[in-house]
Length: 385
Ligand code: T4K
Image (tube, rainbow, N blue to C red; front, side, top):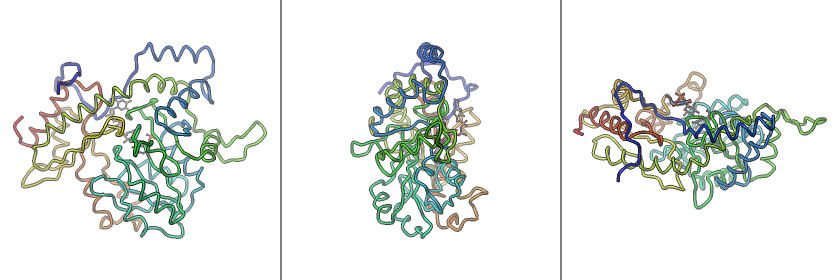
């Protein structure tokens, strides 16, 4: 297949980063800014935020969605809306924000291992970790790989636990014809600049439950119900109109961006399939998968280079892949002394943290840049291009 990507030059001196934000045309963005200027409503629930919430609800196919200031705050708001206490069971193989957000709310993480293939929390490990103090399971659809939501939701039901899914990487991910945010009690999104859909900084919670949506909306606005009544201990977690304007201009571009990313996925998979020690990710489906990240597993065999060796070789050529998520959350200063952080309990998470290499993926990658990444990686592996 030929890529309809532009042919720009890719001198080795030009850095290529793991992600690059989708940018709408300035004219499109300016039109939204003109409306904001005319309304003088800069934040606190103006027209742009109402429009973006409606657009996202219909794009994602969710019943309720409340915009928030970022994906970390979204997890904190979900934690408060669900009135969680004590312990939560989660994966160590995620961005540190997943764990920090709930720890910030006073909860203790209990780590369990991940599935060796999907790299999401392994449901088989969850029930043994439940104690009388457990109030929730926090699964992460890491790289957009869906958690085993059927099994997790069944475990939660049996044990009377709440479920939060961190869907920061799963924008548009669907399962059995439904949005992934239709599973569990609440799902949280990040709309950071590095995400497929973004508002520069931003996030959201989505839920099927109207009462939880109402709680999230109150919590994001200091817990204020009216001028005279402040029943909740809320926080300022609102998204400004300027960020909503960015979201409104970016959302129409998402489908084409995903189509481009699918082509890059195909190109990478084809280019790396014959390299010993490298496992390419399964090709997702448009309309089902997010295409947030492209992650290889590098398991050295008979003298082939390690993941870290490839990482440094690419960096030397001015290509900046990332080792998401190394170090594991369970290995950081704050959490490493927890009983559940013991490495022997988390062999699959440690293997993933050692082996994953996330390569640049975004719609504006040029053919020349792609060739540079592919040649760089094949050369580093000692495989002819
Ligand atoms: N849960 C999960 C599972 C998450 O992955 C995240 C965030 C969260 C929760 C929390 O959501 P937020 O509170 O962030 O909304 C990045 C992002 O900052 C973070 O949002 C993301 N996950 C995480 C996986 O990656 P860094 O430190 O790797 O980002 P940075 O600044 O190194 O960016 C990577 C590359 O992207 C840069 O080398 C260049 C490019 N870039 C970046 C930015 C910010 C641009 O081209 N333009 C930009 O504006 O954390």
